[in-house]
Image (cartoon, rainbow, N blue to C red; front, top):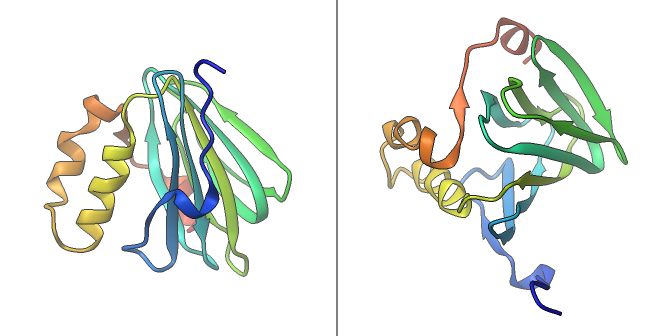
Length: 153
């Protein structure tokens, strides 16, 4: 049972500064970080970005998720899985006309819960948005522009 973790749904920390995009923090270990994000109809999730060290897995638990993969925009439906390797630009949000419930896993983990908490504080007006950009190396989130994503959203 060493390195075993159980997180009960009712005990997960929930970040709800954005009422259209709630995040439940599930696990933040050296080997992985996991959260469950729920996006209401057409709500944005993550803007275009890439990671230099981490792979990101998205599993659609329910609904429809619109995603950017490099320069292509596609949709994932309930039960679909996507793994984005390091350095591939990507973004995601609920498709218009649909909600999306998504399990998101990063490997390796790297203390990302503090990143989600920062986003939540910015959303509540308690932190400066510039802190997000300043944290890019610490949390391995590097934002990029995407014409394809802007046109799709």
